[in-house]
Image (cartoon, rainbow, N blue to C red; front, side, top):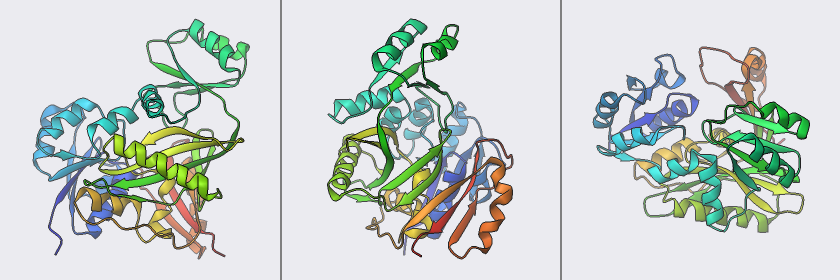
Length: 353
């Protein structure tokens, strides 16, 4: 019989919700640390703490009430992690979180391992921006180093004229400038790693973005076996060095010259692996629960080719059509407010026929 454990989850969005559902499947209770009572994960949790992550007393009380803690987002203050970790084990580990939540630290770390990324530079003022733009060659992409996701805090710059809008920019925020690449494909892999360093890989997905937001993820990706092995080797190296216990998603660019570049890390469940809910023998969420609870990992098997299509903003009003499609599996996240560019759900589509 599986032992009863209470899993603490910091974050109450759709990733926290799907993690909690997977925990319930394995007989575990969940306690969600949420920012608002109406958040998606709150509807499936056994217990709730509604508080800000700056609330030390709430964090301590939360940590004492659970057997372990995991996360649904890397945008969590490390100070909050320090408080929780004094009372209970924290997964995937503080170092992985610290590295992944800052784009500059992330790319410096990746380069320190001898792994390639696109060219980049820390930008602190307009003069540095202009000089680096000309060094890299247009177009470039200026990004906030922290808290940017789904295209937020990102600016594409195509020429000197467009760069002029940043003369009076607020440079108190830290920015990173990334050079453009000759892109052939965007791909990602999710790796699970247990306390003993054993790993299991999910299939590699090909991703397509629209306006900086993930639109579709499709498996299996069409790349050769050599590149597949290279992706897994890079993922293994990063997860080992960061001593990840849990799961980590790694996003890559493949250039026209078939060169592999790491783009971003995410030490938590990832939107590009939602197809695992229907197309695999085990989902990324159940794999995470197994690892952090000390249960055996599953070797991952892809049952059929699949595409995840994200449902963004008001497109949710048209999603009911998927309910009559025998190839489609629809998931609605239950977010109370519909906003432009907000992920409201997804549909997994069987591509086998």
